[in-house]
Length: 129
Image (tube, rainbow, N blue to C red; front, side, top):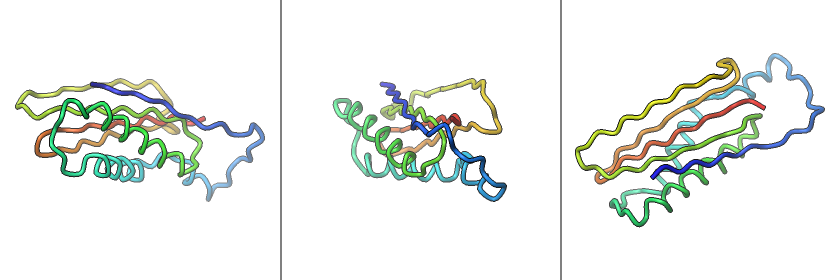
């Protein structure tokens, strides 16, 4: 099951141009986003056992929690978050993506967490608005 959800914030069109020291606050910081995603996964899954009937709810909880925490950063990005939860069965999972965007302002990170009975891969895409 793959769940996707997009979120964005609207900023007034009369925002000031940041001074040089403020530019770091506007950048996509993958380390911060990784921490947000890991916390959302840990909070949602903890040490639960795989249950196909709960996968949809777990995925939505991880996505919602990630978007909620990213919005608290108040950075000028639109976010797309995807979450894949797969039962461990010995079968491989291959994913791929291609991006066509401005690498100076946009970013992405993917967090993979392996639990005893399942794997979770959550990806965040951020495009500056």
